[in-house]
Length: 453
Image (cartoon, rainbow, N blue to C red):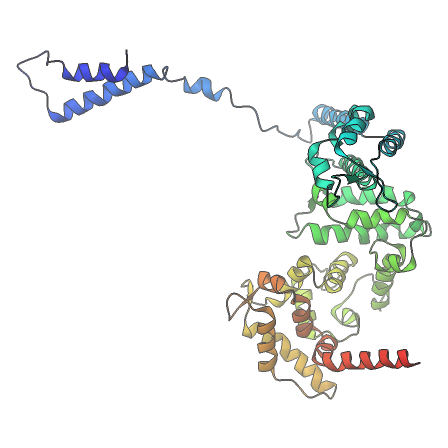
């Protein structure tokens, strides 16, 4: 019987006690009780709450404590077995060669220049013959991802093969990095990454010339770039996923190329010439040879035209030892100044410029730093520039959301952060900005003279 009909009949039935008439509130309460009862029966009754909670799957597993040696060993062994199993699931060189042979055999004419193509039908045939390890690559999603403007609906065999190679490399590298993940939580601490790079050095031909005594400085130089850009909150650890997603590992493994050009080596932070250059600069600045840099020693960095006000802020905010800077802190300083367009570098410099720790730069902050530029201009016999003009130019360049404040995000969004910071901290940088039109004209004239000759 329908519960609604039962409820109607029950309410319509005469009162069993004719002497007592129920109040309107009692009738409503009875109606609600009956409704609850019959509705619960209709829905099959309420489940036991305690039983329901028992079905929630376990989602937290406590890490073994330091004194639980057996549990730690068990966890390490199980992780090692898991990573070995994952490694066996990857394509080896012989299987990759076989895949290339099958793709080449099933190419779909006509070719585009010298590039072989394959249609979806042949793509699936190759997938069937390539074996179970390749199954994940032969899907409609992968084919659609690589399909561009071919009028026959085909994809490039070379592009597909490079896609497979890239995926295999990423998984191999993920497994390789995970072996150094002591905590097993998907991130690497500074010491973990140092161990990884130290053991990687012998496999990189471009680093063959490094003396073993320099290895520790090289590792420190390499690791610092990862942590400066991938650990902005300075937690002391970075996700393995973030390492794989950025280009730094590509730059590092590029050193496997024995024929890497001189230009590529000079622009690659991880190359031997670059590491030696940075460390050589540090040694040259360290005039008292105590292995640390004082404010006076750091003032000779680059063109030696950074303002004292800015340098004061560096030593106030950055980690120092008895007022002097070590090599690791120096590396952060160099990475910030050499990559001023990058958000992590702007964050580093912005923190130094934000003297009141308010999270934004106002007119007072800008004037505080630019006043030091004006003083240097007087010392060098240059006519000081009006702060009002510079302030207006900075706000015009940045176009902040608040017309009176410049936030870090404003600086990043403007794509002018490198120019703004240079104007405020470096006399040579300000002079270059101020005379940019004359410098461009001179470059054009020099180019024209070369063309004439």
